[in-house]
Structures are given as structure tokens and as C-alpha cells.
Length: 325
Image (cartoon, rainbow, N blue to C red; front, side, top):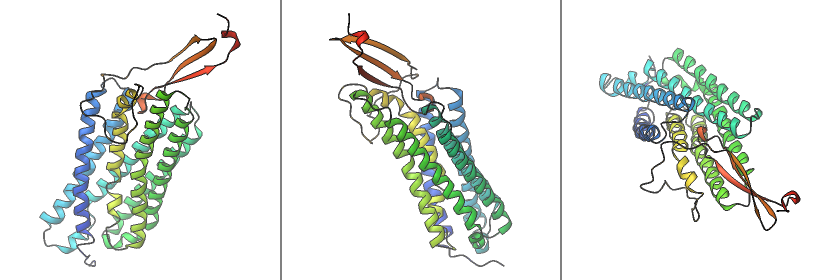
């Protein structure tokens, strides 16, 4: 016979978290609709990533709702049932860990393209993401044998390792994106506006997932025997889904920052803006001559299909070979 858990700090917390999950799931599905409406010509590698993470998230939220139904409807009044680990619980955890891995693998691929095939940082990120997935699956296997949530403290090692490696991957992703994008700064205002926006987007992408990973670790260690750590744990995959889709859906807004007078803002894109059917891939390098000074206009590809737009960088060169005209 298992110990009866406190409902407020266990099932109550889980129920509130399920409501938040449902809201974020709705936001994610809306973004998926916008993505396939605005960018139907994206490479299938990106579309496959979006489809995979959405399917996993639908499985996750379905299992979460089944679990809540079993607790409060089918097993109404059965306090021991509230402490029992059901199969639906484990299904949603597997879907959660896989979703996080898919999102982090996508960003590792983005950094690989941004860093011109430099594989060191992307490989480290991929290893952290893979280790986090392994620890998560290990936690699921361990939880199945425990049978009761009152024994969840025995999964402290695998749970904290999963959060720690996921946090490390997020830190490296944010660092890699910001560092590489900052290297592309020039004296050209239009390109710097785009870079500022992309850096801000990269930071916003990681800040919430990192905060919630830290909150999960702290609450798991300081509030044993409760489900408060689920606040940061069970909605983390929704944050990954929404952040990935937000980056993909703001590419046109980043391109619009090339226009004179454009401002960088962390607020949503202006009302009424419609992304084009497809983002054109541009790769050009042209030279013009003004008062004996060679002006090189270069358009760099910044892994547009990975969620970052192209940007222009104009470099002024005092090249004597172009002084004579």
C-alpha cells in the first residue's frame, strides 16, 4: 500500500500544468498553420522537423489529457490512483524528451550551417542533446519500475542529469548563434539591424527554456515529494516547439528590417504583414565605384531554411586596382 500524497502539491499542480500545456499547444498549432501557409516552399528537411515535433507534441498532450481523465473522472475519489504511475504518464514523458531532442538537433544543424561547416560546437550540442534524451529515457524506464509517484525521489539522478544536459545544450545554442551572428557585423546599418534582430531572437529562444530547466532542478531538489518541479518540466517541450516555430515564422520580418528606418523590437511583427510564398535565396557579390573607392556589396546566406534570414553586408575597400576608372 502506497502513501497517500497531498493533493494540492501533487495532482493539483499537475492539473494546473495540464491547463498551461493545452494553451501552449494551441499556440503551437496556430504557428504550424501559419508556417505551412507562409512558407510552403521550405525544404522538406525543415518541414519534416516541424511535422515530427508537432506529431510528438500531439501525442504528449493527448497522453496528458488521458492521465488527467483517469485521475479525476475514471478514478474519482481513489486517492491511491492519484499516486499510481500510469502508462499514459510514461508515453507523454517519452514524447516530451523526443520533442526537446528534435528541437535542439534542429538548432545544432542551424549552427553547423552558420559556422560554415565548423562541426565542433554543433557536435558538442548534439552530444548534450543526445545525452539529455538518454537520461530522459532512463528516467522513464526507472519510473515504470517504481509504480508510485511517492518514490519519484529515486529518479533524482537521471532527472537532474536530463535537465542539466538540456540546459547545457540551450546555453551552447544561444552562445553559438549570438557569437556567429555578431561576427557578421559591418558598418552597414541595414545589415546590423537584421543582425540585432537575429541576436535578440536567439536570446529570446533560449531564455525561457533555460529558466524553466533551472526552476525544475531547484524545485525537484528543494520540494521532494511534490510535483512543483512539473511546472518547469512538463511545459518545457511546448516552449521548444513554440520558439522553433516563432523563429521560422519571423524570417520575412527580419528581411523587412533592411528597409530604411526599420527598428528592431522584441514585440510581434506588425499587424497585417504577410510573408511571401517563399523566401528567395540570394548569393551575390558585386562591386561599384564611387570617387575612386571600391564598394563591395555582399549578400551572405545565413541558413534561411534553418530559420535565419539572409543579410547584406557592404564593405568599403580602398583597393588601388579599382582606383583607376
